[in-house]
Length: 138
Image 1: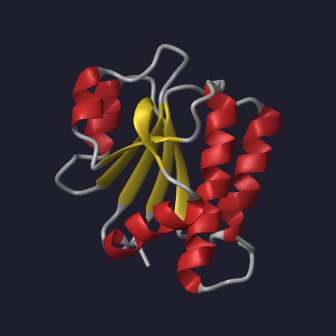
Image 2: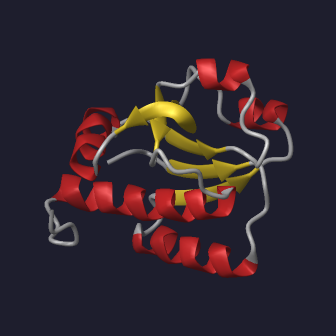
């Protein structure tokens, strides 16, 4: 398993979405943490590209199903990971260029909060697939 998985974004989440995201974080038993940043500089300082596998959500990213994403994550689980959801204004090109994976959740556009919640559930689901847990039925 990864040393740590971080779910990061540039906007504070509403109380309702945050509560839902925290349900998945708690299920991961200390494997995952949330991080909120006001600037890309703060993100870069906390998660240097050389020390973290970076998965950045982007509309032009690769579409993967859950098993494909789990398969991509599995060989990289020994290194710290950060999943990043941008603000309503997106993510700076320099950060996108540093991604190990640009990931699209869907061709549809979601608010950053809904994307963050979908991401939290998918990270949890992928880890259950990797562990062979029956949570994922597909």
